[in-house]
Structure formats: C-alpha cells, structure tokens
Length: 443
Ligand SMILES: Cc1cc2nc3c(=O)[nH]c(=O)nc-3n(C[C@H](O)[C@H](O)[C@H](O)COP(=O)(O)OP(=O)(O)OC[C@H]3O[C@@H](n4cnc5c(N)ncnc54)[C@H](O)[C@@H]3O)c2cc1C
Image (cartoon, rainbow, N blue to C red):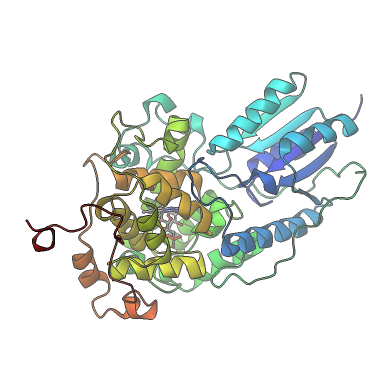
C-alpha cells in the first residue's frame, strides 16, 4: 500500500501536548508535513483599521513558533514556516508530495474558515479533517445543538458547568517523520525585541501554569481578579491560551488537581467560571459566524455610533479626557496586555463616551493584544456595545466611579501617565461651523 502523506496546518494550536488534531494526524499517516503560514494572520474585518501585529504580539508569536519547532524536533519532526498564503503554498506541497490528508484544528476566524473551505472545494480527492482543540468541550458534548446555543452566558453556564471535561490528550509518543522537502524554507523570524510581560511557547505556558498554582494564587483569585496592574492578581493564562500553546483542558485538569490537593473555594470555582466565559464565546463565534464582525452584531438594528478619526486616534494613544482609560491604553500599547477591568472600561468609553463604532476598537485590540483571541475579543466587544449576548442591552460604566473603586489613590493612572492628556476630544478650527454654542455664537 502506498505511503499516506499528511499535512498539518498549525494555527492557534501551537503545541504538541493535548493537541487532539495533531494526535489524530499522527495516528493516521506515514509521513507528515507540519506547516505554519504567517500570512494567515489576517485582520478579521476589512475596516480602515490597523492590520499589522503589534511588536509585542509579533514577538510572542515568533517565540511560540520557535518553541513549537523545538517541541516537534523532540518527536522527530520540524515546523515548516512560510510567509506565503496557505492557498499558494499548500497546492505546491500537494503536487510535490502527493498529499492525501490535510488536518487542522477548528477555528472561529472567518478568514481561516474561508481559506479552509476554498481548499476543500479545490481538492475533492483529498481527505480534510478538522478537530476541536481550542475548547473545553467538543461540539457533540454540548447538551444542545449549536443552533440552539443559549442567548446568554448564564443560561449556557447552567447547562454546561457540571459536564465532564475529557482528560488532556498526551503528546503523541511519536510523530510520523516529514517527507524529504525540496527548496529553501524561510526561517522562523528571529525574536528581536523582548515581550515585556510574557514569553511565548508551549514550555513557557506549561511552566507558567505550574508556577501559578504552586504559589497558591488560585485560592485568592476572586478577591484579586479586578486588579489593573501586575502579574499576580489574575491568572495570565490568556496569552498562551490564545495561540494555543496551552490548552484550556490542561488548565482545568490542573485546577482540579489543585482543588483536590490544596482545597476548593469560591476563587478556584471562579477561575473555572471565567474559563466558561471563554468557552461561551468560542461557541458563540461558531454559532454566529460572520455576524461576529457585523456592526449590528447578532441583533437586527445598528447602533447609532460612527467613526470619528480624531477621537479614535486619541483613544488609541491614551489621550482622552478620561485618565483611567488613558492609563489602560498606554499600558496596552507598551505591554500588549490590559486587565479585564481595563478592557471593559476602555470599550465602554469607546462606545458610550466617544460614540465610536465598536468594530474599530475591536480591530485595534486585535492588533495590539498578545492574547488576542477572535471569539473572546469580538464577542466581548459586541457585549459591551449592546449588540451581543447581553440580556441587559449594553454596559455603560461610570468611569469616575470605577476609578474611585479600582484606582482609589490614582496609583495606576500616575504610573501610566493617564492624566497627561490635552483635555479636548475634538479640535475645531475656522472651517468648522457652527463652532460654539452659547454666548460666542451670539445666542
Ligand atoms: C473588550 C474586551 C476584549 C477582550 N479581548 C480578549 C481577547 O482578545 N482574548 C482573550 O483571551 N480575552 C479577551 N477578553 C477577556 C478578558 O479580558 C481576558 O481573557 C483576561 O483579561 C485575560 O487575563 P487573564 O488570563 O489573567 O484572565 P483571568 O481573569 O485570570 O481569567 C482566566 C481565563 O478566563 C478567560 N476569561 C476571563 N474573562 C473572560 C471574558 N470576559 N471573556 C472570555 N474569556 C475570559 C480567559 O481565557 C482567561 O485567561 C476581552 C475582554 C474585553 C472586555
């Protein structure tokens, strides 16, 4: 029987451990090509918004790829890195190596799904397999069909929180070797700058997971989770989870061991609760597809917001009349990370105070966040903008009140220079009319 040659397309599953899609490929073919295309990092929307990865996100990604290469090497494999589109590179590999099977993990990104569909249509004789590896549950585990996904997180949580979570799939003992590849392949780019907070890669993700639980931080998570600055107030699992160098199942199984050995409490439960939020958005994205990026979200009517370039720029640069927002945005621009509390405040400000079209804010975070995850980012933005899964309609935060609660001594604001702004939102000049209300316009 001729040898079966497979191709595994990595995307947001940059790990060998608990990678069910990779385990499946390893079990089914004799030779395997492991490919990652950087070109596939496309923005999810075609807005007039930035589309490049921030240096922090880029660094974290290249660290993750280098580490994956090392991980694959241990199993006799290698990572083929390409800057071409999968639609250009995969056809060449198919012709050269007589590939009969193509594998990847399921994805919530619209671009990735279109790309996959394109390949499936173009190559009817090839076997295409996608496996869930980004979620806690498989679709078949859910107690409802995807089309009947509950319309709010609470309803979802109640239905799934007691379901069993499958144990993580151990790294395959052996990966099929790569066929002899001709030609020169680009090197994974050298990591030039250092990500200030996080080091990308599967080994780093697993080490971080261990460190987090060894230090017993999980036992006080619920009390600390609304912090704005620092490494320890929340788990910081998100960067590794987002590009898949750490799996959500691996985290939950580590959490369960911790609860068994050290003790379960409201805080350990709350970590699981937050992971269920993540889970909800993953299925929400699968359920709603392209609507994740629509101005009207999953609702029927459009918001009344618009795009004002100057306001948008000021928000991005942390130069709004709201010091807490400025501090958060400067933190994001400098580190590639922002707390959950901060994200809610800056998104609320974007939509409700600045009147901006939420999609531009989501696109900016897509560019900047080291933990950018399509489903979590666009789903949370929809929620805040009132076009998503929020039964209350929308969330508008009182920024002064939030500052008093979460930054009472303005330490965070001072630390990031949030009160250093020009004080105006919109500039006016002689060409604008009417310029002012009241006395100056003679009324
Ligand atoms: C406007 C906005 C944009 C966001 N964009 C992203 C994004 O691109 N990627 C991302 O991973 N998270 C996003 N979040 C959710 C949340 O802010 C981050 O997951 C969290 O801040 C990551 O830090 P952590 O790992 O320390 O979280 P922890 O508080 O320690 O939570 C543990 C884990 O639970 C999950 N989680 C927690 N809160 C949420 C939430 N609201 N929605 C979904 N999952 C959650 C994350 O996987 C997180 O790692 C966004 C939230 C908002 C309001």
